[in-house]
Image 1 (cartoon, rainbow, N blue to C red):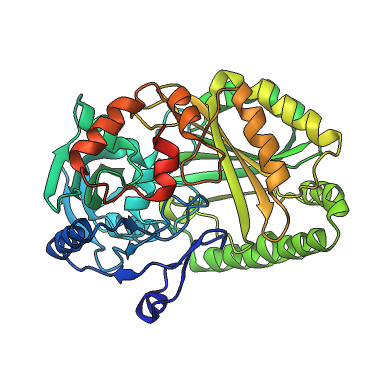
Image 2 (cartoon, rainbow, N blue to C red):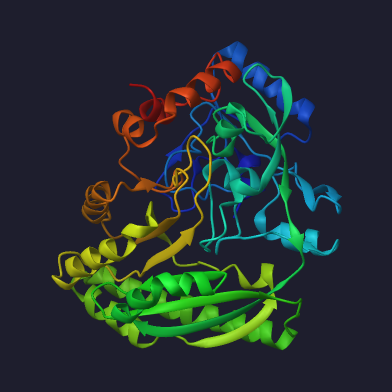
Length: 440
């Protein structure tokens, strides 16, 4: 979670997983659009680059500041709610965990959400952060208007339409400007009925296509080398509030079982990696099954205190079964010492020049490695395998993308870069990491 004290003390910048570190020469915490425009103009005049660091929850260097680090921590909160249009306008520094309670006061809720709630809304929409649900898009797909300060220090507002700028802003990685306000589509307040079960991989694959159409949300956790998956299904129901007792018990279970016990298993695997397969099967055998109902923003998130590295890819939904069978066959051979389960989700296809879905219904498969264990051989295999399935990595996760490969994966990349140049002619938001990804 963001630490205001570290910013005040001018300490080194690092992301949540501590795999990306930098030493920016300047750090700013603006409180208004006017302050942001002054900072951008200063960066332009001095030839420095800016990165808005958000909550630092990206595993890639997409948010890494090289010269100027800017946080919108002081630009948070709900600006307005349009009940007729079912839209809400937020300051872009608002953290996802703050949005649910804010909207609930007006009888509204986010349409969808992932299981991590520490990100800012700016970071989430700029990188295409998503939850699960084949009829639902990413948080980026809910945006109806962007308010941003471009590379000249000019504040602009743009309403989504069938135009090139909308396609570029959809997932922009902060390359067009500092997003300071965002208007999103919302829906009437609802609860989620959650059911968690254990199943076999074989049966899960057999019913997968039907399952994801029958439920609003379906999420898998596949345990490497085992025949077991954990399936989480959620459906929207009328608002029902959990009791304080239920919340306390749920928190206790997460702290003791899903985080405490898993931390102990992870430390054991770090001490002796050869135990990873056995520990994966042990975790699979002890999958917690259960059922609960609560307000959506209380059910979506799953606290993660066990740190890890992550790589995640979107593949065409029709390729999911073949891909999972290949993954399972590889783990059965014992090639990799991995005990962290793979997380499998689905999303609707959506527009956007840099959207990993490229308009296709997609399955997202996330691969994790416990912090302290060598992830590179594992992730190298992931990157190589995913090329076979035309996989596009989540921009905020570890990847081996090169500019050449980006041009292959994204047919409209030149349109995006042309718009980027229009709104940031002096490369204020174009860091070294981004240049490697987008400059041939």
